[in-house]
Image 1 (tube, one colour):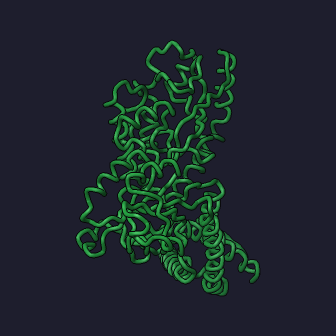
Image 2 (cartoon, helix red, strand yellow):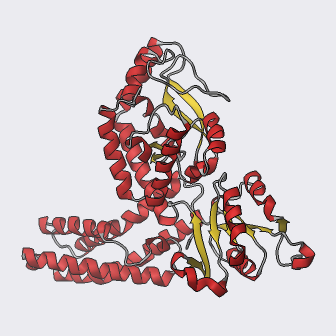
Image 3 (cartoon, helix red, strand yellow):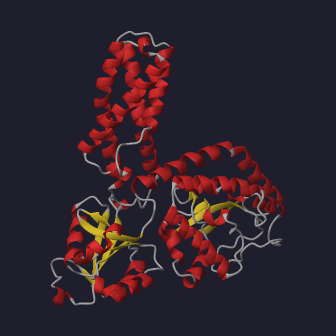
Length: 467
């Protein structure tokens, strides 16, 4: 966890990230044409072809770092080095292409040499500016996560001090320990919030998002008990091991400024990973909404003309971190249940309208949720959101149920493409769905999202459980 999680990943952040990714290509091509104009050199087809190749290379070449997420909060010097290395790789690839294609004699050497030496300086300035903009947007009070510690000792105090003095996007609320303030001498060094048995209740009531368990290894049973008590929360949980026995579990740990921590329960969408998924969500959902706008209007008109009630049905569901959101769907029923008790739709459900059956059969009723994706309430791929009433029922029956809310809910998900969509008649069916949801959290990648979207497209046309 080398940087904060974006709790409120806004549209503005996604747009800045998109511009940040496109900026190197824009600068490189812009500088090329600027020098062509300045030196009064004809901009012929060879230069146009070079501009296209440069733009593609600048977009596709990765940044030379072991951890791409560190680009968000890297210092100016590492950023500059990264820009220079990337520029060197791009020039090498460009020269290789020009040599193979035998185009080297068709370009003005004056333009190429000036461009190759001046552009990196401009790229460093632009990269630094975007880096600072992104840092300021992410390091705000709205994006900060509220953290508490289970255990008051030298390790937890040292880590709390590090979190307060650095840009990890966290605010430390205090500590929980079974010993009294007088015994711990905690009056000046940290706020004692209560006993360990009170931790789970405090986390739920105060919307705590990060928990550091800093109990000695000899108290591992107490750690296990705490994990069980915290399963009904959406908090990220880290274990801060005892330094004296740290070598036994070093392969499973990370560190914050040299202080080791073990991630036990964390979202896959932190730092740049979260931004890449958000940018993809915004681009794809906006494109699909524009392409299907006539169809959406036609469906809304058909619903209004064939049955009484609004075209759009709004339902309360749980979203990221278990916060309540409003999800949009085309109305497919004559009733609009949204209270404490909701009956799941079933095959040949008498509440379903004639056009509603068609919409549900081909999942067209879900299209308005693309607006939810643009709003940042949902994602294209993720655990399907359940009605609030169902959430409150199943969180009491299924251990670890609420962990699925550590990511934005999706229009489609891993459970749905594995045959677990539609009505869940038994607790075993819901448990199977939750297992797939948690598997998605453990194994997420852009590639997995693409697989799920592709399988969804195939299943929409041939799904016996769509009704």
